[in-house]
Image 1 (tube, one colour):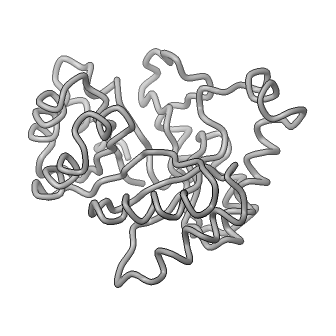
Image 2 (cartoon, rainbow, N blue to C red):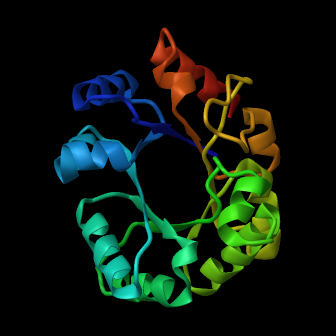
Length: 226
């Protein structure tokens, strides 16, 4: 299991200060939509130059060619892992993997299933009568068939995804509150012990680290318990 720290702070300076504090630790850094729109690909380059592996979390969702174009640009940033929505469908996911196959190297490519802010009620309002758990498995099988490397999912779906696809199919689980911290705006949250039991390959932790009085100590506590 790897720890991926979400750089969701209000300014680039604050994000870089957090990254500097974590330098030398065995962590990945997650660059989300706000940070990327604000700080651009140059921000990813700065993190790479500091020695970090970077997950560029933009959750691309568009028609197939546009999705493939966007994922190619994301790969050009030097990010080590990128993602797109499985809801874009088979043609879009195939287009992305075919486009990236022409490169000398490519990032890991994950599909987003159901956002961890969804419960069954909210999910049903958008996706119809499917329950979250069933939809996530269906999306995961599709992404696996299209050659993606794994899924973004909640810890509650991680083990079921591996059972439905492959032990090697990566699960990255946001919404981790390592030691029972407040869930905030997330719905399907889990603690560290549960994520480990469900064989999550990556856990994404944001507020419990960057909002802590000592972010480095908070990250080190998580690393000691992985």
